[in-house]
Length: 99
Image 1 (cartoon, rainbow, N blue to C red):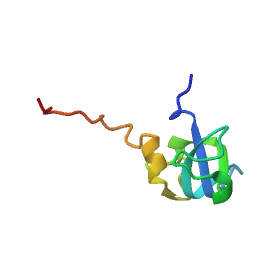
Image 2 (spheres, rainbow, N blue to C red):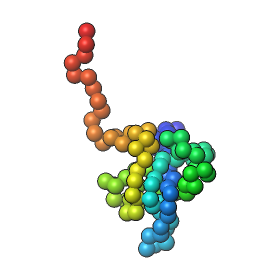
Image 3 (cartoon, rainbow, N blue to C red):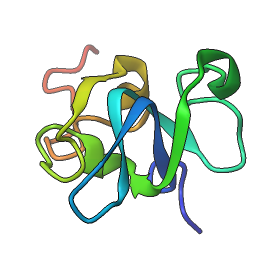
Image 4 (tube, rainbow, N blue to C red):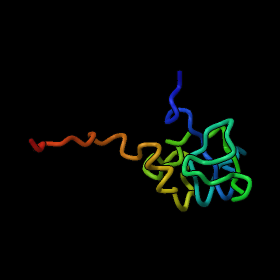
């Protein structure tokens, strides 16, 4: 079973086409799960006029990935936190717990 983090696609405020003709997100991007009408941060897709990109996975639009992030101007910080933006870093642990 795929978890929420793995299954997230992208919703964005704009679109562009790469040289191969593939439609990719541009502008402000949010994490979105298929079958819902809202982003992970709670923004309704229809009212915010966000475009859905079910063929683009969330990790591909992060600027450090270099994948589909060419025209991404802003990544929603709440969606990034919901998706675990710092996945590659070591998880937080308490080193000196209180008694």
